[in-house]
Length: 61
Image (cartoon, rainbow, N blue to C red; front, side):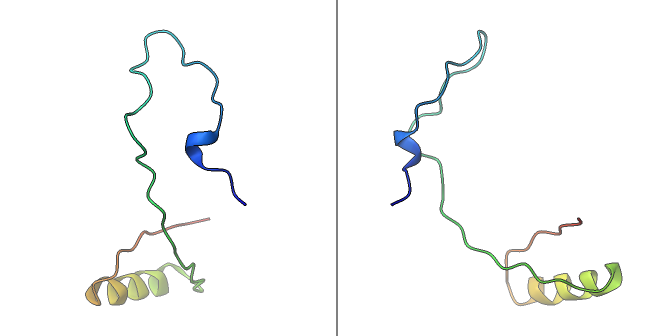
């Protein structure tokens, strides 16, 4: 069973930081990576998915 983020013992924060965020701000997400042959094809696919109302991010590796 995966460990919950609230159960992980983190090291102390360095002096001057704002501290630990309140509550659990982690939001579970799911995604799909689609490989395309080149940048123009990436742009076309991105625009098509955005037009369908999908939440998209562009990634280059």
